[in-house]
Image 1 (cartoon, rainbow, N blue to C red):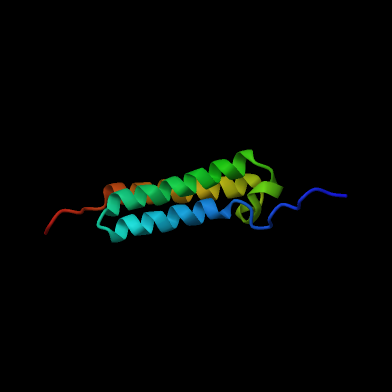
Image 2: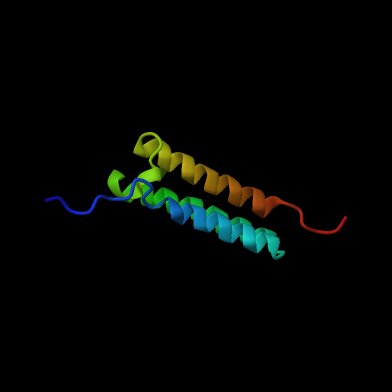
Length: 91
């Protein structure tokens, strides 16, 4: 008899929940904070992909571990830079 099979989607919900939370914050008027929340979600997904086995992270596995981590952290850094540098002042 075998143990319970891991979910094929794994921990993808961490990224999804972070993006949804960030969008809710943006919708409530916090553009910068919402962007940072989404960037943190991508960074956390990268850390999870780096340290956890394929069977646990599930749908976060797209290519090789290195490629996935670089892509997720790249999106996190780019989003944080864009949110930091956007001019929110009145014109």
